[in-house]
Length: 173
Ligand code: UTP
Image (cartoon, rainbow, N blue to C red; front, side):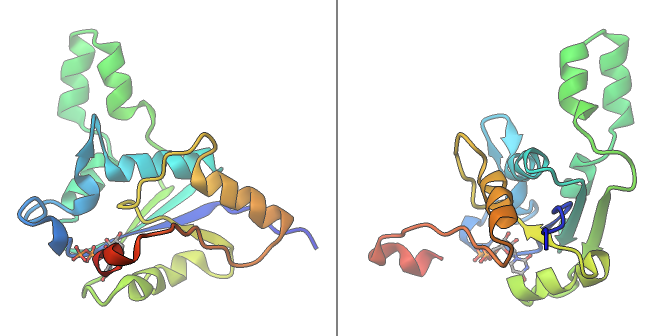
């Protein structure tokens, strides 16, 4: 039987981010920038490159920064448009998915990663799905999730991407 395409991804972004305090006091760690994009934006691009079409964010406190990032910013877009700043306009909104393809649900209590994924269950149903942890940024010629989706089509089943960590660093994870 052919595995059905993976069109849905869950982004658990409800963690407390205590290791990055005070940066994460009022900002989710997934909004911390690396050069000119917040981490969550890299994760979003990785999902798009893997063929994902529906994006499910499981948020916690301070969720507004993330939901605002994935929405139009009319004031900003209007100002950029009046000034004919097309490049900046594209950076602001050209990449946004169509309305209805981004879903936000609240975890309500930070009970851990497994619980965050479980909170998305009604949006997933029986469909295959991806989970992306935006705070693990992977640099690869073929984006990590794309590699995993390709592998899933060869060998359907549960797949996890893992990384070797020196033993003395394991307590950081
Ligand atoms: P982490 O293990 O990095 O935990 O979560 P954390 O709470 O975010 O960070 P520290 O340890 O306090 O510094 C891994 C992923 O799971 C999400 C996080 O947002 C991160 O993407 N997560 C974690 C949730 O969505 N909910 C939780 O209750 C815990």
